Image (cartoon, rainbow over all chains, first blue to last red; front, side, top):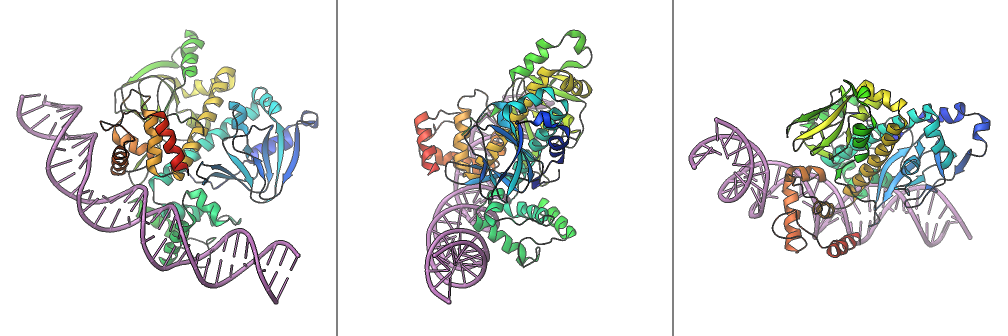
Length: 220
Length: 220
DNA sequence: GAAAAAACGGGACATTTGTCCCAGCTGACC
DNA sequence: GGTCAGCTGGGACAAATGTCCCGTTTTTTC
């Protein structure tokens, strides 16, 4: 089973933007901008003028369905690219991207990004890698969350969270798992009762061997 | 909401392979092969020597989880590319691809495909488009199936099926929706009882306006 | 064309998840 | 310091889904 990545990062992109492009190339086509927590970098259904490479901060990529419920596709950290799919496909945004903390990101005009795709082999390579990686992650996660009960998916999520110092809102974690906050709490409580996770809070540590035993247990 | 594609096809790839490459270029690097129904084109966890472009037939891309359950990522029809992600990432297959009918496909050696990516702008462009498209589809579907009850996702699936002359096994449809066959039957029965779908079978026609009314109904 | 294998349909029951609700806590703001 | 909004935790119940199972129908195989 491939490694689940909760917060996607990509230093290679950041390095590319910051060190591989000359000032002349950047001119007014590539610049830095910042967003306060809670604001939107992209909005579902809209077109966008820029492709972004996140420099600092944490954001969420999410889809709001017609019934008002949110599904979180992924969390983005340092170096991740956003808005590129829409440029490649020339379609409006499928997702909304919301800053969870203050975020700074490089903005690249869509025209210039489109130019880079065809004229810069290195960017092209990074882009292919990134798309392939995300496709794998997305498929693996969709499969995972459909096939296992929520409690099991939660375990996996918690084991990832334990390695993260960032703290998330319950709602966001629940949206990420595709369950209600109530269900999320319930599962958490059960895991605590079975002494699987530490009673204090949810950014808790799970012993690796306990985790692995559970995975096997459920797996059978 | 973007259009759900149940069977992915891509004539552009097929056209590329069949008409854009000279015989000299193909040599022993690109050739046609066929598989009987039920056999595997790719196997989860293994490496592969070829990238395939499906010429005829129907196949399913699926992930088998540790507990033995299957999740169907997508169905592939004419022209779709398979195995390319693994080549880009140089990783073993995340998925298994199984022929549902007899399948013929062009086989391209991974080396040659890797060469084409960097030396053939047209293939590179098609590849980016395909990845972007699939990423959108996968995200949209994951969101959809997590956020709505199965019966609703089923309605959507049925409305797509109605436009398809191919017939699917119940198990495959259930795996695609990420539910058990029992649940699938139950939902189907309920939809029939409410006269939403034709009583005969499930490759039935749903009136567009009935369908849309239901979507709104659920949507609120 | 008979026997074996697989797919189908659904009853009964257990488990999981969602909805609604309320009470306690916390932090923002006046 | 008060109050108000929002997050939190969980009880009670309803709805959705899974598991197990068995008789029927369809398909495959020899």
